Length: 305
Image (cartoon, rainbow, N blue to C red):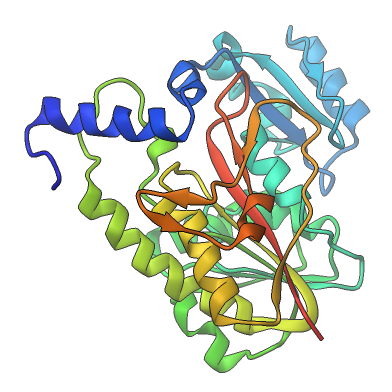
């Protein structure tokens, strides 16, 4: 039974995180660095870095990505006043989010669906690599903010749709070469300090929505294509259990390998509170919060011919 008092809720949350991996609590809420990437629609890395250097910033390059950089968290407020930022030459984005987008192997001829796209950072990454991107977002306010984001950053190959992602497969069955679903979730990775808005009802509510969305995402994917399912939460009900659900529902689905070029991650769990998952779920990745990485979960999924 869920504990009702605020102190008990926090205790329950921490007990669950400890069961997943105690290292999560060590990094949760500790932000030492932030990350950004170069917006190749507007600038080269050299052009953006020269402007940043003039403004007194000295970014550190991230070795595993294309034109990714970090700065101390103290520079976060100041950088939004820099020319590189105001002219949209750089895009501030968490390393976990960037890595998740990079695991989708996008080819120059691909049509990519971003199924829960706002605010649009991952769609912008795909737009630099793909022929065409379709970005879907149901919330009106977030949708128009996302469209403005795309325009400001110079992405001209993104189509936008204000639509519930659960209905996309009905109108676009098997259309897309690649699909990315960063699903709405209980956002446990964003808990910083006191646990106030989290509870198990929230986790269960999102888990139901996530299963509906992942079905739509998978059925929108072409045979032979691949998709990535991701969340910014830790609960296995929203992560491993959703992947297990997909694998059992679709025999043509399978997990594809992910090879993180960093150490702060763990493999997918194979059981949680009495429920056992398909052994292939171990191939999923849970990123542990550290440095410029926030907590994240992702799984790369292939669809058989």
